Length: 152
Image (cartoon, rainbow, N blue to C red; front, side, top):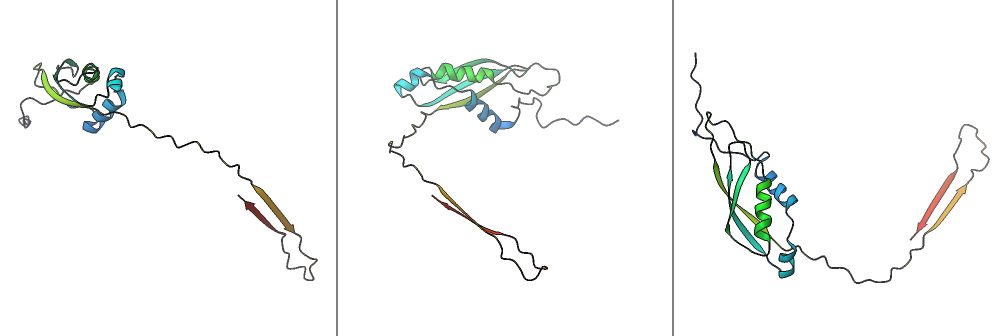
């Protein structure tokens, strides 16, 4: 009978499914820039400390560094949507504390090109076909030729 191999750490940390890239994608997909922050042109980073229970659900989130303009509430809302995978820790129900930074950057304005009257394009087609002349040799059968000319 072999002994069960012990892990490197006694308590294993929770992991977000898909890793850090997937977490960033989830946050950017669900993040909505608050209207008040847009009007006031608030930009920056919100620092949050959150608690994960033994089931992998975020049960508490506190703002460590505030930004204002509704960004704090939005960051807390996003963090509470996260779900983690918590490996079994020898039957012990453990709470985990983690920190996260959520960045709020103003969306870049798309510059509209000056409206110029668009010129209408004229498209003309020229199709010419030619029939082969009556041939002396019946073995050489040539097909008809054609030319397509397109002008823009």
